[in-house]
Amino acid sequence: MSDVREALMVGRGSTGKQVRRPLSPHLQVYRLPLTARLSILHRITGVGLAVGALVLVWWLVAAATSDGAYATVSAVLRSPIGYLALFAWSVALWYHFCNGLRHLGWDFGHGLDLAGARRSNMFVLAGTAVLTVLTWLIALAAQ
Image (tube, rainbow, N blue to C red):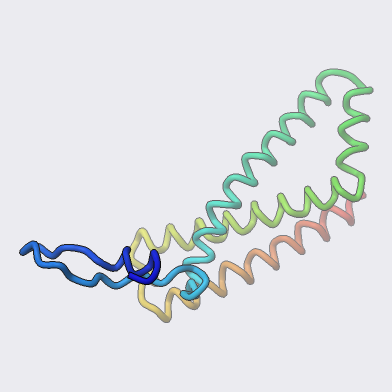
């Protein structure tokens, strides 16, 4: 055997006879479909929402504690990095919401075919973009 890959391909069948097993393609070779990438992103945004919820709790506790604590949190959130974090949190929130609606439709058996999945991919991405922009237009207009 020339290398490790060759050794991994050798196995025994149900009869005990030695057979050559195929190796599955890896992520560098196989391109995940958009639906699979959006599924992974759904899990990532769930973690991001949990982190954002901790920041929200920090803000609420600071508001209930003292003016100085609130000013500190407010200064952090109004910094460029704070705005970037709030923007990312709002994108994660709206993405998770839109993708959750898609999963709700799938639970009822709608859009499970290939064309329906592709349409719902675009709905999730477009809905996320539109709702995020609307949220920030409303939030910045209120300042």
